Length: 137
Image (cartoon, rainbow, N blue to C red; front, side):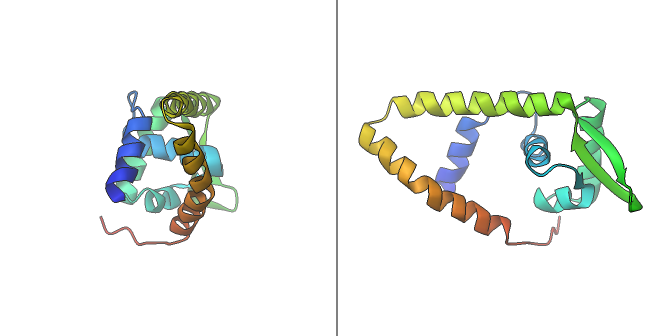
């Protein structure tokens, strides 16, 4: 099953100049809103210095805004800029088009089975998201 998940992910996502971590970070910011740099590092399973470097590159590209938490100026909060939101929206639309094209080549029975599995897969994703693991890299 692991091989299948990795294959589906790589076949539907096009890098288009972004590493997997950069693309995942942009998507996470789109879904979660302003997020602490340390939380992003943990979520993407990279070291804090690696996430800091990635954040700096995304800021330089105009995709991410780097700010501080009004309650604690030591905390770095990252959020998407309008350009960053546009990039995420374009990438998601392209992914949906690739999926729709692939689904159109399958039988109606296969599409029905895949659609029936989506709720369970969403619950699996939620369960995985709730399983915190310490980053050791």
